[in-house]
Amino acid sequence: MDSAGGRGGPPVGGAPTTARTSRIGIAGAAVAVASAGTSALGYLVPVLGARRLDAADLGALATVLAIAGIVSVPSMGLQIAVAVHRARHPGATARRAGWLTAAVCAGLVALLAPVAAPLLDVPLSVTLLLAVYIGAIVAAGRWLGELQGDERFLRLAVGMALLAAGRYGGLSAGLLLGAGLTGSMLLGTATALLIPVALALVTRGLPAFPDGRGITARQVFTACSATLAMLVVSYADLLLARALLPAADSGAYAVGTVLTKGALWAPQVVTVLALPRLAQGSRRALIVAVGLVTGSGTLLIAMSALAGGLAFRVAGGPDYVGLGRYAPVFAATGALYALVFVLVNAQVAAGAKWPSAPLWLSTAVLVVVAWLVPHTFPAIMWCAAGTAALALAATAWATWRSGATRLTGAALTS
Image 1 (spheres, rainbow, N blue to C red):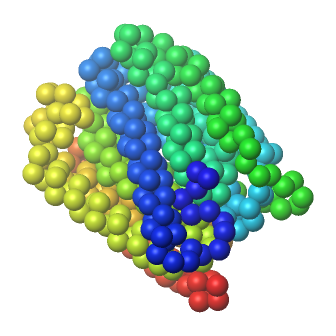
Image 2: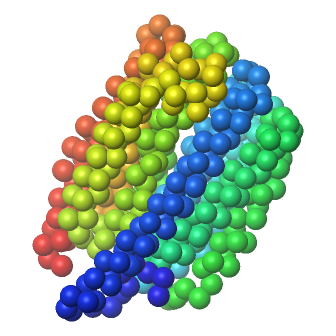
């Protein structure tokens, strides 16, 4: 079995317990490696862009990546919803929900392309390619959720690696080949279309029971809206920088957000492993997850404070070394949002009705404040950091009031 835990009874005796712990460790390491590889490929695109594109095209690329990150969030929401549902109902299906979610996301981008392209100063052809690209990414959530909910973490790691390769491999190759913004996006879309095919092969043989236990639209909507709100609030500063700052400053800010996203996604493996247990009512899983993510964020902030110039050099090249003093702020923003992500998952697992509400409120505050303060690099950066702290406080309060309370009750009755 490629599961970290399986679905049999609790282990009896020292040897089975040791074996189970070993499987969890191996599975966790595999998911961590896949997550790290995903992050590395995700960093590679803006890093290559900073070296291969001028400031204006770099800002456009960062905007495209931000839109892709936001609109493809339903893939993550779909994965979370499917994982939670399958953890409670092994074999529950999500085929129709998966394809429908992907079609809605792709159609939304295509529909808004004629307006969004000139508004964000991005070529229309790139925006239309982005619609297809996003559709393929969103569809992947269904298969990854099935693997995660069944605790097939080794196969989940393979699926994550395939998704990362399809999502970022073509874009990176295009930039390396000097294909420019449009050519790179074309190649990236072509490789993204291979993702559903690859994941369908990886999930062959999983149990499936289309007997009425399929996931509901409300479950998918709740998870998608919560995850979308989390990504919107964490990417909003980049979009505001693109809209409010000169092209050169916008490009520099895009380099800084590479550090933010690193701190946000570095501890992703913790949430991935904890989610099925959260869905089954484990309070301990929530406590451990929050502790591990807090430790990861603290370490990354300290490293950024000690080597900020090096961090900006790696992220954007020697032209951005002078911005190293800002590295701890960008890292802290990402670390705060990583904790938000854990709590959002806990609320979805606990069945909270509106886990996204505190995040939409935080986003609104960020937009208003960013428009009111001077339109400078440091001002946008500090607005983002303050919003991350606000989002964490609001989400923690909401989790305590609703999700965590239900999770605790489920744990006590299990």
